[in-house]
Length: 345
Image 1: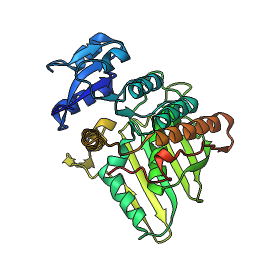
Image 2 (image 1 turned 60 degrees about the horizontal axis):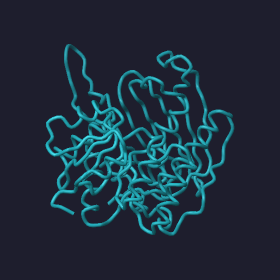
Image 3 (image 1 turned 90 degrees about the vertical axis):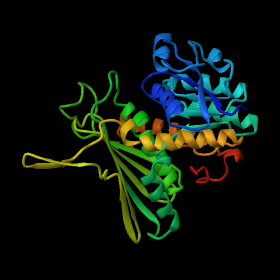
Image 4 (image 1 turned 120 degrees about the vertical axis):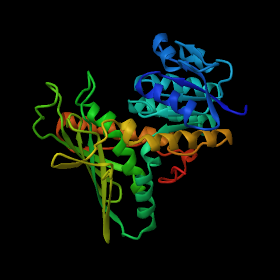
């Protein structure tokens, strides 16, 4: 391994281009060695001004490019399985954006492939584990000072949904973050899900069931509710309140700049997840680079990616049926240790 970790970034869209910028300008100890994207022009735009970066339209070509020692996958979810398996075949450590693989069977195949290797190579990009407020809440809950957690109340709001966003994606794309955050904060697996549908907002595209109210049950009897509203129109808001036996704690109040003008006062509301969680993304990628340079893999792993996909699938089934839907996970491989141990450090 050279002085700087050579990273191949797969996917040069909104998320991938931001990771290229982050690796080049924010993170220490790494450099962008290659970028892969089916659209060469998009990849060229993402690396404009960077020296020594090769551009490729095929996954294998990007992974085999000179200087590549690790992979950051930021392509659309359906492309993740192929990229992960190709990286595993080359023994390359990976940071893969969520979802690890959108469907549970594909996620299971990826996890089983890593188990066959006998060592972890993949970290999954559930960046909320690296957010300062979420980490503070995790430490508090783990301390036991508030007693056993009874409920988590979560809010997930976006200004607007992108084109072709479906009702199912409110769960398997948006709420997938709450799925992982709840598992991590509580140290428990989710065992069942129910989805309630209020009347659709007039601001939602025709046919989109937005907002939704998602209720999860955990293996130790806690409840997790999520209000997901992806066309709220005013900003990006993520909040979480833990209600425990001896107290409660709330994060996500976003104490940002207060603007006073012409008889009014108000706080600015972030308009994008890349703004709200900028520090978390920076911390996540830096931690991945540091661990990779030391030959280690930390943070959420393939088991966490698999579990999130299974729970999200159950959530989509609950949305379609209107019924409470049980979550059934495969046995947890020894490679990933007992539940709750794959924490961000």
